[in-house]
Length: 411
Image (cartoon, rainbow, N blue to C red):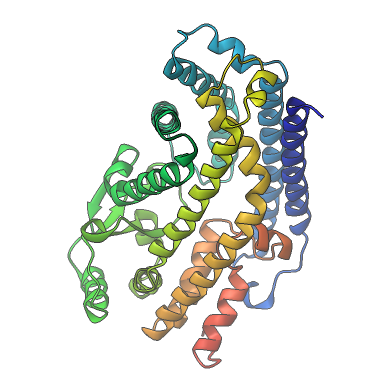
């Protein structure tokens, strides 16, 4: 079996796997809702949720099918190699040509992104983005994505040409540092898409500051993000390391939750910080980088792979395409199984910290509000949870919170 046939089989298998998951996701909408979350949606809202869930699922299938067909055509007809021949013969320009074509093909998917944001999300009342915001995001994403991939490609090329078989350790180490740099600088980089302001002085800030001081935890600031520019959905998260550590609250969160519910969500995020979950996630990222480096090394040691797709020599951009879109995509379900298991355990532990701070009941009510605002699925398939969910289902979280509270029911 030739390399091209093998790659096309893998790409097809990955597509069919995702198609299977989408099918399971669609069927799970009919699962009975657990009693402890039955009050999240009233009858009218639940009917609306089922319609939204079905429409999003059908859209996911259509979008993934379009993406699959485009990628299959690019690979089957050696389009990457043909496009690269239009550029100068230097290794850098040949690499850049392939990555540019990959980025340009993403533009074909913009109508799908438009339909999802300005169609489906708008239809169900979640979208707040204007056409100008949407197109601005698309331009920024295109340029930033191309810049990042070109930088990674240049790093891979220079290290392989310089170090040869030592590529694995060096590239994995450098990529881990690059990821850490992005995490460290995320509070700065995120300003490209959103505006942030310090949480105003008052009761809420006083309570949140007291929580931080009680636990001896220091952050650069507590910021409010203008998420309402794009959506009605809510969230909160930690970002950055060291002196750049920042806690971010969506403005939509402040608009819909009580002070104590926000404190509960904050205590949950604080739990992540105290448990060093960001650092643990970076260790897992390091493992992923080693795996990607090994795949890149194996690919670069097999010149027949490149000739099978029309190239006359190694192309570092095409190496990245194969590693990320084909080789790692095949291994991704297993890796995701491990990473998501770790993440769900971290969520339970962070919930437990909020209970320890005395916010168990408020966390339950806050999580229910978040579930309603974000149109969360209340009874997902157990298979989907294991394979895709970084957070436990809401009903399971509530069970654990109530157990931590000594079985006390939220009133």
